[in-house]
Structures are given as structure tokens and as C-alpha cells.
Amino acid sequence: MNVLPDSIQVFERGWLSSNNIMLLGRHDTAIIDTGYLSHAPQTLELVRHALHGRHLDQIINTHLHSDHCGGNAILQAHFGCKTSIPVAEAEKVRHWDVEALSFKATGQRCDRFTFDATIAPGDVLTLADMEWQALAAPGHDPHSLIFYCPQEKVLASADALWENGFGVIFPELDGKSGFAEERATLDLIAGLDVKVVIPGHGAPFTDVAGALARARSRLDYLAADPLRNAQNALKVLLKFLLLERQRIPLADVPVLLTSMPVFAAANTNFLKQSPEELGKWAVSQLVRGAAARVEGEYLLNE
Image 1 (cartoon, rainbow, N blue to C red):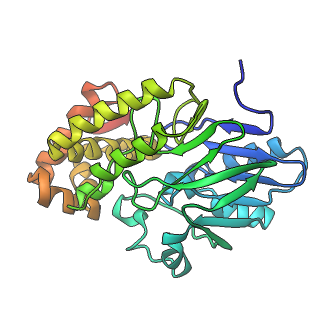
Image 2: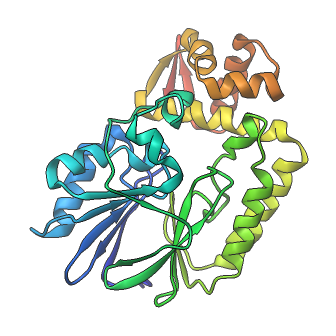
């Protein structure tokens, strides 16, 4: 049974691309998050099909990790739509500062896009004839926003809350605070009257209390030993590369991992291993978890 209003459509995209949330109002249309660059043509077709000949008026990004904004450029080119981003990211996008944006740090890609407006915590947006509150959701990303619709009790939670966890706590890899911020974000969500959550990845869900309990347990586990967060990030980003490329020479894995600035910091702070050791460990973990397999001299996606 569909627990979302007909004016809200969710394209569940899997773990390389974030979910896309289409909001179809009587007089306006918008999309929250646009997936990863390699899926951009598919994103465009999904949006065109959902619009049934209407125009896309606005793109809204919860945060600017590449799997949430990789379709921005193609949608802008096709529809000429307005784009709104978190206010804290404005100067980085205006100057396309790849050092400050996360793409280079994580070894990911994103076509350059522009923006027309910014969204700050506390702003109220009217989307699909409903009011949505923009709320600060640091933890996974220090500048992330989530969007809450009190009228329908719907929360677009981005990577702050999934049905079974949340996104990598990236600030901690660089020695900055992130666990405390994620905990505060979970407390914020717990204080909302939410009927259904649309996460950044995975299907929408209604057991909000259960998801919060699992997320808090996961956070306690990671915060008890920050090395665990670094190891989790290592596995996640290698899997991300593998999802995009499907096949990686085993000999290239150490270089790919250590060429990411985020891992230079994480290795200095927590992992403290040679590139070869890091690569071997990450490959073994993906194979052990049935997320990849080794065939000859290659690591293959599963």
C-alpha cells in the first residue's frame, strides 16, 4: 500500500545513485537529488516520463556528494530549471572548487553545474502544494539538509537516516567531529512526527522508531572505536568505484584508494597501513561480504 501522496514519486536508485524524489504540484514541479553522473541519462528519462510533458521547475540538493547531484548538469541543460543548494556550499559551487567539494577527495565524478538559490536551515519551501521545512542534518556531511513535511508527516532524510543505518561519517576521517553531530541529527528526527521516511538510499519505510534504534546502535559501535568508521569508509568507497567501473585490476586498487585525499587523512589518523595492506584488506572485505569477487588479476563487482 502506497503511504505517500500521489504528488510524491520516489525513484529508488540503489547504492551508486541516491534516490530521486519527484514532487508534482498543480503549478510547479521539483526533484530532490539527482543521482550519480554515470546514471544521468537514465535520470533524465525517468524525470521526463514522470512529468508527462510538463516542465521541471526546480532541482533541490540535500547535500553535494556526487551521488546526490551528479544529474544536476544534464537536467539543467534539458529543462533550464532553477537549482537550489545548501547555503554553506554556495562559494564552492560558484567557483567550482574541486578541492573544497567532495568529488576529488572521494575519487568520484560530477559534471559542473550552477545554482540559482540557496537553502538554509529553517527555510520553508513550498513543493507539490505542501510546505517543507529545511532542517540541518550534520554528521554524514556537515552541510547536509533534510526536508520535513508536517502536513503529510513525510521526511526526506538523505543520508542522515536509512532503514538500517546512515551514510559514512566523513568528517571523522579527517579528525573533525561527526559522531556527535550525527547523534544530534538522530535526536532531531526522533522529535518529529514522521509517518514515512524517504531515505537517500533504499526504499521508503514507516518503522521510524526501529530505524532510529538501529542507527543509534550503529553510531555507538562506530564512535567506540573511530578505526571502525575509517574501515567502513574504505570498504564503501572501493565498492563505489567498483559499481562504477565493474572491473578493477587488483594491482590498481592500492593506488586508487591512496590517491583519494580522504584516505590520506584517514590513513594518517586511523588506518596507519601501507597502500598494499589497505588494498588487500579492502578487497578481502568486499569478497567476504559477497560484494565482489576476484577473477584472475581483476576485482569484479557482484
